[in-house]
Structures are given as structure tokens and as C-alpha cells.
Length: 180
Image 1 (cartoon, rainbow, N blue to C red):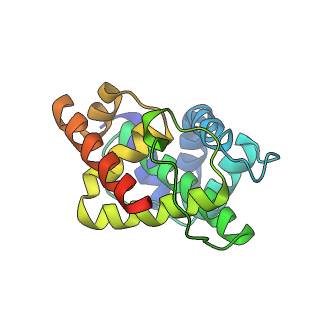
Image 2 (image 1 turned 60 degrees about the horizontal axis):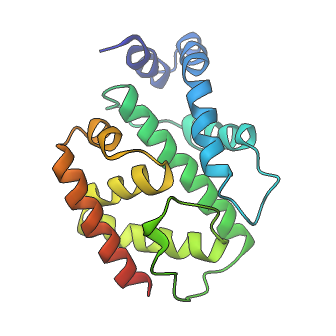
């Protein structure tokens, strides 16, 4: 168990000093992840990485993270998911889901700015996929939303590289069928 994991576990138990130390360690990477996610936000171009990290902290981190954080990669995967949820919540506040087909080539290129309707439709589809295959949904989050490579995804999920490729292919085809 590394120093960050120990600090995060202490923070979850209410140790404010450990929480401050953990935040100092993770903030640069959280801001990088937030920058990737915020850059894809078309409906709210004023959303900065700093604001997204602050919202993540206020809405997700401060109220508690799962107690079973295993390592640094696990924490950042949880954080990225939580920040994506913050974006989903913001999109929901701005619009209602309008069921319209999504470009079937959406997953053939890196994630770019998504319209709120597309983001919400994709979130609904990801929830359905997660019910069917949770690991495939995590692969989509890491590859599509965060831009992780297959190798980085395999390391974050602790699965073989060939499994990442299989999960990604399955998830893309399933999501395209669901969204079109």
C-alpha cells in the first residue's frame, strides 16, 4: 500500500491533516483529468478544470469515497468517473434528454466535445451497459472519456491487454446499437 492510499484511507476516517496531504498529492492529476473532461463540454465553455475539480471535491470527495480504494490508479479511475458524473448532473440541469440517434462513428475517434443531449444519451446507455457488463463500461470510461491507451486501461483495471480490446470492441458495438 503506497503513501497516497494510506492518506486516502485516513481521510475517509475523518483525519483532516491526511485529507489535506492527499489533496496536495492528487490535485495536479485531478486537474489534468478535469481539463480533459471540461474541454469536451460544449454547452458550458466557461467550465474550467479548477471549477470541475472543486465541484468534484464538494459533491463527491467531501461526502466520502469508497473505503476499498486499492491504489493510486483505482482512486483516479473513481475520481474520473465522479467528475464525469458532475458533468452529467450539470447537463441534466440544463436540458432534458431528447432521444435522438447518435453518430454511429462516435467511438471511432477520440472523445471530442459532446452536446448535452449526446452526453446524456451516452450516460443512459453506459448505465445499461454497466448492468450488462460492468468491466466493459469501465473500459469505455477510460478509453473514450479519458483517452487512456489500451495498455493504460489494462493496468488501471488489472486485466490483460487482449481483454481490454475485446471489452472495447464489445462495448462500442453494443453502444452504437443502443444509441442508433
